[in-house]
Length: 638
Image (cartoon, rainbow, N blue to C red; front, side, top):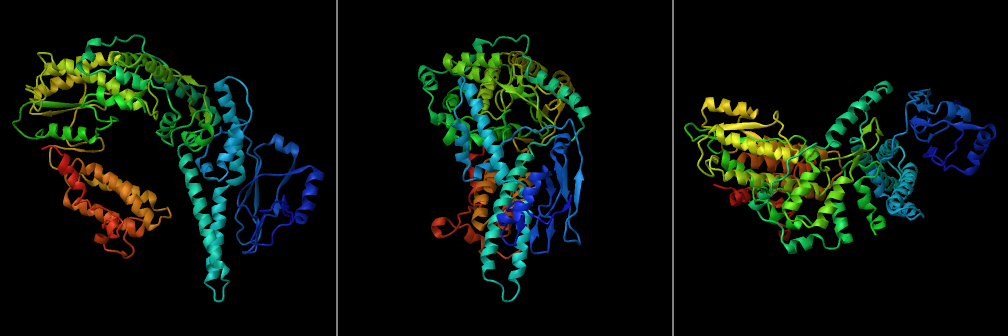
């Protein structure tokens, strides 16, 4: 290990004369004849500098049997300090339990101009076997191409960024000197483009790795941890209920079913376009399968490898009380209704009333497949369509990453997959059964409605009937209430009756206001303090963008498409206080001109001009007091 004063690779020198083959020949021949191999280095790329030229001429070389006995042997290149040469430190960290981490597709590879060519090269290699096995082999071939592309083009992104920053700083310092070379302007521009490119790549890598954090635990603990993790998930996902109550067919008469025309619509031949739409609906950052490929890869590689029906009928089947995931309905409808129901809860002398907030425990993971199948049958879904759905559910398997290594597959016996585009629709149908059960309960003579719906006396008997109804639904579907997270709210109910109801339900007594679907649910008019949540959400979005190189046009798009969308959701429900509207405007104005949350420079245009429509020469940033609160006035009940 030491200063060999020789280069090997074409990128072993920066800012000096281009490396020629004759410079490398003698040292390469020496390594070949002696059977020596250069050790892998980490840290700084270059080991020598005169503050202008950077070279890698210090190395550690070993015999091949060292590499076999000590596979984790590596050399750390330290900071050079006052010397021209960087010290080298050898580590002999030999962990027999350390294993190669499984392949994970990195999204930045899709930005490379040869990405699709590399995918095509791996995908189109001849393979044999049945259909699914051939798909597995094709993905394995693509994996090899992706690993090679990442190694050749994107290795050590952080070191590249450091080098570009250093070169950019050096070029800018030279530009300050009198009589500098005019070519420095082009060099500076080129370096800035390179820096923006590599910073973007580094951010993409960091964003993905933030979802792949491995526990830093010793090998002695890993088996115990693995056993506990597998025990938990096997209990949660791989154990169906031994016995469930059958669904009541009479419940389905409390609402519509599919007619023949709708049934035929669901079993029309599936087109390639429908498959692609389903793929696009999956979130890019959802966890990959055991093969390491996430959905982002399949979206980007679809032109090579790619050679919603239930949504169309949901509005017919689902009761108006459910608005999420149903076309033509808004989730804000539920919030507006809830606000109307809680009005007056804080007043004295009102008629008895109570409201329950029920949190379903592990709802997606707990619902039983047999129940889903029975609901689909009860709603008149065609047999072929039900078979498709059940095939999708019953072929699910999971693998848990522990310290970066996958466990054996766990074959699921119940539950819906998070992130699957069809899961929300199936869960809405699950809750539609509960809605119809509640409708049946409403026909009982002893059950009393909320006072805003029908007459009610706040008696314990109605709550008992409601809980009997929920228990029946629970033993039919597999879903249960999380009593620690569920609450009950009272208005005008006698203290003794309150205690009876709390004892009956096991719920805690809640106090208004609370947060419901991301917004405050209160008995009073919305206050500035309650709007702090909205302002914090907008500030959080801005702070996540401050490190990006954004043009004014880019900031305008973020204000219109992201910040305003957050504000508009609230404005559909509330009339925002004037002070809050003003603070939102100030926040957007600061971000537009400075890219942050502090106004550190003078605005180029008055905000009134910024809000001009495009036809009048402005960016068309609509003002909340003219636009957003108008939504609330048009939709708010009462």
